[in-house]
Structure formats: C-alpha cells, structure tokens
Picture 1: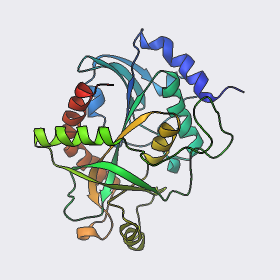
Picture 2 (picture 1 turned 90 degrees about the vertical axis):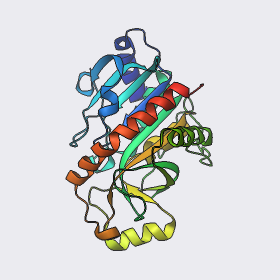
Picture 3 (picture 1 turned 180 degrees about the vertical axis):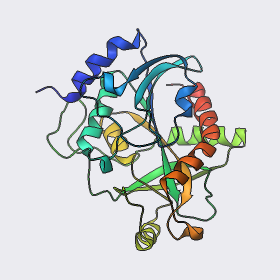
Picture 4 (picture 1 turned 120 degrees about the vertical axis):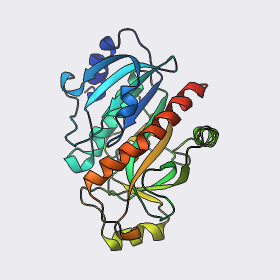
Length: 273
C-alpha cells in the first residue's frame, strides 16, 4: 500500500509551477516571519492537500510556501504538527517523506524552546548540536519502507556539523548572538515541572521543547542533511523565576524572528549544496 507521502507529493508537485526546491524549512511557533519574506511565493494551504495533517496551534499558519530565497528555490512549511495535538510520530514522518519525494536534500528545522540556563536569555537563538528524545516516541516505529531508509539508521550526527559551522560563522559575522547546545524534546502540551527541569539539566539538556526531534530523526533516516535552530522564548520553570506561558512563547519568538530570518537568509544564500 502506497505511503501517505506518495499521495501528498503527487498533489503538491503540480502546484509548484515547475519549481524544484532542494531546501525545505519547517517553521515553529511564532516564527512565521521568515516565510513572509520568500520571493515570488506560491501558497498552498494544508487544507487544500487531501490527507495533509492540519496544525491546530496558535502561531502556526498552516500552509506551504514555494518560492525563492537568495535566488535559490525553497519550500517552506509555515507551521508544523505536534504529538500533543494527537498526531502520531509516524504521521510527522510522512511529512518528511513527502519532502524527500519532492526532491528535498536539506531540511532546516526551527522551533520555540525554553532556556535551561540563565545566560541563554529569552529572545536569543540556539544552534542545535544534538538532542535528547524524552517524548517516549520514535517516528520510525512500525514497518520500514526501504525506499526511504534503513531499518536501523545511525544517529551519530543528526545535525550536520558542516551546517552548524556555517551557521555559526554567519552569526558571528552578523553579530547575531547564537548559543549552541542540546535540545530536549518532551511530549507536552504541559510545560515541565521543576523536577522535570532539574532532570533535563542533569541529563545535559540546554533547552526544552515539544517538537523537532521526530522531523530530525525521520530526515536523517531519509538521507537528508539537517540544520536545527531554537528560538529561546522563555526560561523553563524555576530558571530565573520562569513560569512559561504560550503567550510568552509567541511574544519572545517574535523578538527573535528578525535575527532568525537574517541568519537563515544568509545560510541559504551561502549553502553550496
């Protein structure tokens, strides 16, 4: 039986007007500004694609945007789905498989995340160098489709070092504050308790969030190269008096959006793949 990804790709491909992007981006909560800067855009609402899972969270527009960044064709997902909305990690993997079928080679993942360190202040960015998956789920559980990847993919370098190095160089040149650390995914939708925050810090996490890991794992399985960037939108519970809310997440994501847009624009422009 064909995967959902086959159906989604077959519907999307004719609507790209001949565009053949090799770079795709998934934008997190409150980070839709980058999508609004794409030149010569073609908009495809998720709701117009039969079977495409719909985002239900404030701050996620719920549409594909095909167009150009620095004269390079890109495909942008302006809004993502999450486990806490009731979607399975396998459904999230279907979206990544769709990108693979459309010819994507590079996947840029962004998210809103809570800081676990007082020096990593809300409104700044963190380059994801690795992750901890504490969601309790893996998007590759179930039958393996060998068309996309092996049964037991290696996760030695989920976030490509060459991409991280380039992003860090660009941030330094543009005087954009850019932390680097380990992203920890929990399922949500509740924010973490003080004990959970303490646990994450003991395990080596630098920021907590509720997304990104399923897409990253599925992308590596599919043979895509991944860049991950978190917009730090709040302190986690108990860090510097942090008591996070979704409203705070959206507010501080907007504060980080300008630097994120500049960083991603230059990154895409300088990417030689």
